[in-house]
Amino acid sequence: MTHLGTVPLETPRLLLRRFVKTDVPDIFNNWSNDPEVTKYLRWPPHGDISVTQRSMEDKLRAYEGQDYYLWAIALKAAGQVIGQIDARGHNDAVHSVTIGYAMGRAWWNRGYMTEALRAVIKFFFEEVGMNRVEARHDPRNPGSGRVMQKAGMLYEGTLRQADTNNQGVCDEACYAILASDYHKYK
Image (tube, rainbow, N blue to C red; front, side, top):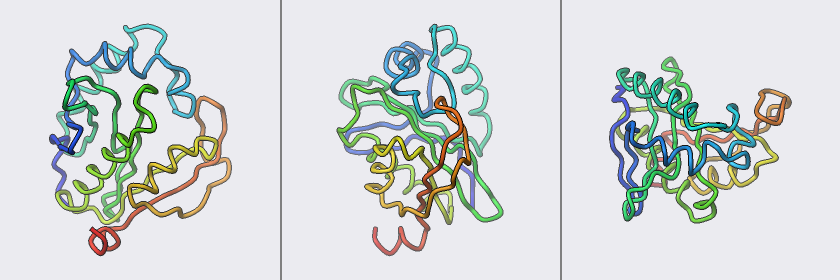
């Protein structure tokens, strides 16, 4: 396994890239201030663009680490940033990574997040050498689970009252794909 950091990834419709300071207005306007987008996330909606700015400053500093993975999801055609996808944590002992994501409501149900997740899965298996890519969601947010399924991840079970989000204590539906599964079906 070789950590490469947040390198640009490209799909037919998207460019996954590092965030830059000038993305702050898109982040704030497209998803970070929307209570519906953040409903099942661990961080509250940003009430002011200054919150997004401070958050972005921390993220930009973190890019210095080769084991830090956070992509802006930008539409190729417009260049607009519509969401984010990241590796929330990795376990180098078992070569696994946990993915999280958020996207502006205006782009839901168009396949963008599935496209982004597939690109990140491919990157972690083919470039970094991970053995397992996993993701979790609150079962009250079934759309997130559909994204995981469409990206080739398998449902592994639900951990009861195992996490918290903006709704309080919640269950976690767990999905994963192994390198052996990925390479068998790619």
